[in-house]
Image (cartoon, rainbow, N blue to C red):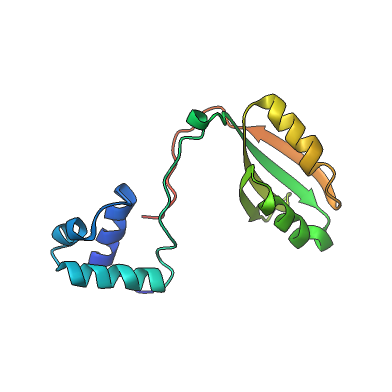
Length: 148
């Protein structure tokens, strides 16, 4: 989809405040509320805007262990394993990758003990997994979920 400067400005403003009212967006982009709302609806309909979600601080919810799992799987099991991982409530991201591993997953857990239990109960028993390399995030420097 071709986006003009106004569309990009709307997206940038929503990136800063996803709850910004349409009237306020309209003031910033110098369009009427109706015209701005029409642009928002077009961006949603075309799939540029997938939805609006809060960016939650997981540590404040008691999930201080952010684990990244690089998983090597047997090729015939990739889809099944990816779907199984996606169903686990602790797993927030699952990607199909190129390179030495097939799947990359990001899981949020309470602590290292919870991570150990999670791996032994939910990951290691999955048929078709050859190897799991687990890394724990020590510090976050940036979280930006958009390309703007």
